[in-house]
Length: 290
Image (cartoon, rainbow, N blue to C red; front, side):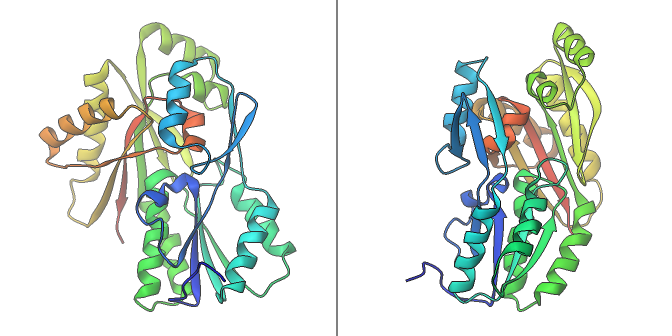
């Protein structure tokens, strides 16, 4: 007997990188497709066998820990889609992190070509990650429940991609350097001067938009971006993000509330994402609704 309860002919699949399991883990229309974390030669299912708190504790305690990630394999994807079809679904909307961060979107596309079932799959590369990625899946569920057709939902989500920004800073540049997103000279200079980069991830592209020295200056640099993005009147969806250090995020959230009036719940960044940016990252994800 399937665990699914059919409330629509279309299901929604999100990735473990979205952290959506923290908001709607038992939604009947939702399934999560996990990625993998490789920590000191052991392999874990992201968010299932390795939770955020345990992962970041390991990174903090063992600075030389070897960490890497990998996408789901085609067999994982095909098994999930066959399970959905057996449960009575005829269509599925899959929301993924940006293809610039992972091969997962391509693996899903290849799996769709190989699988032998009648399920129609719509893949939306959100161009984002973390809780902003989660918002796409939430919107898909909401609109399906309102009766919108999957094709129209996908068109809406594609337009939404340009409206998403993540602004964040990291405690150490080690992980960005290891993953090829920062050159060695930049890392050495920044480490020597104790500088923190202020980074923007938008529509699949990572850019450095500033630097700061010290926690308070870093907080203020991030808050400046929030103020600039929220100055106009259209509806917004805003998320707080942190990599393991809840105390550091609490300090940032308090300063953010004092300067902007926004009270933001912080959501842990998944181990798969944290493997690429390290512990003590803090940030804000902003979606300007269409």
